[in-house]
Length: 334
Image 1: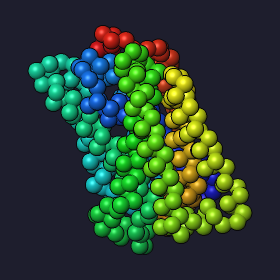
Image 2: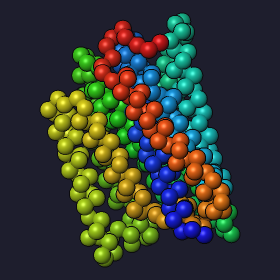
Image 3: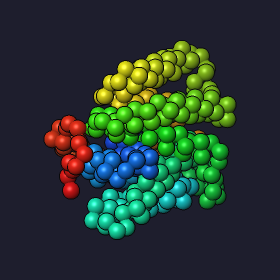
Image 4: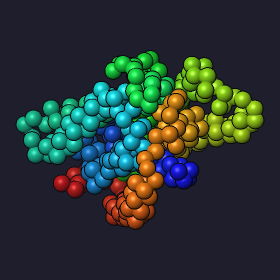
């Protein structure tokens, strides 16, 4: 087997996951912050800031899940039974949120229920994604290449902590996105919300960073054995620096920089998780090479991705450029 093909596919899936987390993260964050808006006009404006983007953002979830199924079928066959319940809850929450996004504009008499579906779906989807992440990082029981655990193995305090951390992170993305796209009272409220959310995100990142090496020996060895500790020390140092910059930019009243700083925190957190788990796609037992599909299948799908991925990226850049600028009260795309 060509050793590099599973690595390439692992990178593709990693890119899809981080693109989904960042792009769909801020519009899930809008839903999480939805109940805190003071009046319906502010909720209209909040929703309009993501109206041109939200459904396109979710295509990265399809690429990530589809890529796992095609390129690493054994990993897919192990991960899905282990995490069926949070995955199903996440998908149902995304469905409720998507339906609410469309119906809220036309169902005036029942708008408050669609508001609840939008905010509740966003909150549940974000929490479920964090639980899925925590369940994967803490490890899945495998015997003879198959899932050998129970249906609730994922339900641990660590996974629940990760779920809360993702909710806080998406909320921070949503608040900093509103700084870019809105003005006046709505932007001011978003700035006041961003600071406590930043503190919460940093607390959750610190808790996960301490919990994982203490609870999982494989992660402790990866980070604290020599010479790894010297090579990897810049990761937490840079994370602390970026967090300080986000705090400072929020205090200074900056509009765009807090969002991109928050994206930087997500990228650094993702890098830390990758360092902790690679090359295991199903920690702690199955690597990307052990779970990879046949070489012809990987090559066939890779050819399609090589042509389509630049098109998708170009479309995203185009859409975000077309709908740049602030959304003012009364303006929208519906």
